[in-house]
Length: 86
Image 1 (tube, rainbow, N blue to C red):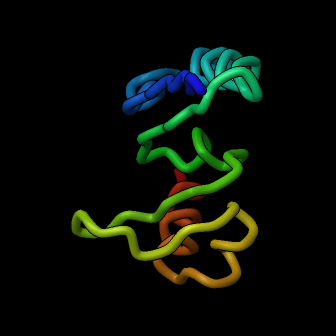
Image 2 (tube, rainbow, N blue to C red):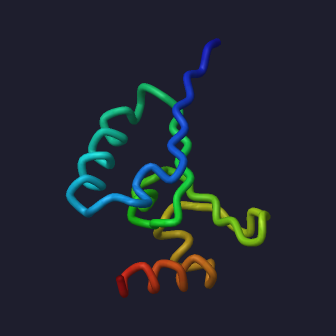
Image 3 (spheres, helix red, strand yellow):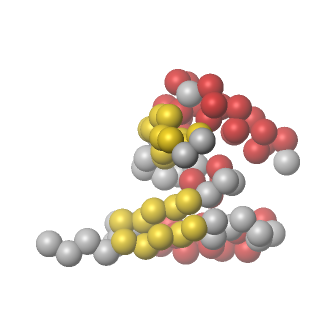
């Protein structure tokens, strides 16, 4: 069985909101066709992901959907609240 993986590493980090939206739309169009791994500091880039891994100091400290992480992970919740302030 062949699994095709696409890796986006900080694909939206230096983009304006309009361009980020276009990249996000392109990523959404790839869902179901590929396994997509996204490395991002902007939570808006990963918010709709099936599973998010929260990394702190090089270690995975939690994982889950956006909604799950907001409920159970204080670190993620703080990142999300800071992201909203921007």
